[in-house]
Amino acid sequence: MKEVAIIGYGMTQFGELWKQSLRDIFVEAGLKAINDAGIEKIDSLIVGTMTPGLFVGQEHIGALMADYLGAGPIPAVRVESACCSGGMALRQGFFEIACGAADYVLVGGVEKMNDGADVTYALATASDQDYEAYHGITFPGLYAMIARAHMHKYGTSRKQLAAVAVKNHRNGALNPHGQFPHEVTIEQVMNATLVADPLTVLDSSPVSDGAACVVLTTVEQAKKTGKPYVKIIGSGAATDTLALHQRVDVTTLNAVKVSGKKAYEMAGVKPSDIQLAEVHDCFTIAEICIIEELGFVDKGQGGPFTEQGHTALEGKIPVNTSGGLKSKGHPVGATGIAQVVEICEQLHGKAGKRQIKDAKIGLTQNMGGTGASSVVHIFAEQK
Amino acid sequence: MPSPGYRREMPQRYRLEAAKCRKCGSVFFPPRLICASCGAKEFDKEVLPENGKIVTYTTIRVAPTQFETQVPYNIAIIDIEGKVKLTAQVVDCRPEDLEIGKPVRLVFRKLSTEGHTGIICYGYKAVLV
Image (cartoon, rainbow over all chains, first blue to last red; front, side):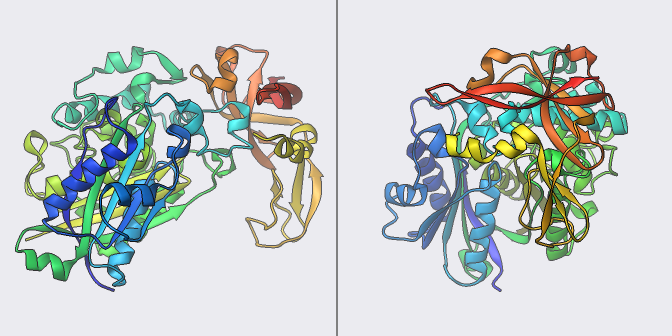
């Protein structure tokens, strides 16, 4: 298996991009990544996107984007795994390079959620349509039930949930790509409009448009460029029951745990070796569960750990330095790749005011549904 | 949600028909073709009891279009006598009446309407006991 490197990355602004179409935002991010890599052509295109069919009525995304990128008759395919479509797309690109099928692969993620679709319905299709969505459950509702169970079982407080949003908005205020780059207070989060009790609108990631892309090649090729690059040293993916109610314990995200374990094993690192992580904080409770499953803190202790500041920029393990899904925005298919863009910026020392000093090893975790699918990647800076 | 699909799910939504693995005795709702516990492929029909208790719950205040007229409404994950868990609305009560561990009973109710023709979709909801 060949070693895989990221030699270019780029993303659009995240937000309500009324003046740009689905294809416009993808091409913008794609060209940024290709220009950053300094290459002339790509051999293959892989696009992660959740449901452009429901959001804007467009399927057949691989061919569309290859066409509008002017990339010629290259193979192009769309990868879907709900909100971790982007992360799973990266994993497929990783394999294409690793097995020698292509020299340069453009992997991107994209979603256009603000074009008038019933977003709550579209997102709920990632749950069990016949046995969850049929009863009127929504994604905020599913995560609210995880939150309620976590609070009951481990004593996690409403204030600790809010601390996740406060921390991520503090980081996001320093990110020029973000949708809501401003700080919020504990009181604002707790007193915001309820979406699904006990979660408020400020516990929830926003509805966003955006795209992000990376260029993958072999480490061998990357070395020839003479520029620093980021090596993908671990990749792990796993699944769980689609329906939340079918799990033995609704506070355990087993797919996150297993995908993390596989990535750690492949990379030959431990949770304590990770210097920063971008994780899937679609709701505040999600980040608490994820940092537990990834082994940054013991199960049940994610709330106090966050409240004590251990996941802040200056903490033991900075989590979501980009502002996370919460502040930066969550165009679902783009999220998994935007996480990688943040890790690349950090490892290259280009993260500005949110820079983690001497960052050498970073991790991304991206998940679909209530954690029915999860993908973890680990990255190392190479000079 | 097309009507053929609705008809297909009637045994579960109307009659709570689950499947019990002949080899290991695990119960699945909805039925599966392969036992998730032991991998066996033979099952017997088992009708679920109507009694359960709340595992966790929420109150939905922002709903998909199909449920917009019902907000706010309560939803819970319900443990049916330790056999299976399922998701259902909890009705005829206020949000503050819900608690983890409280006993509930499944009842037959209207859930929503489907499509332009407004076909009525029935199924199970829960009430506090």
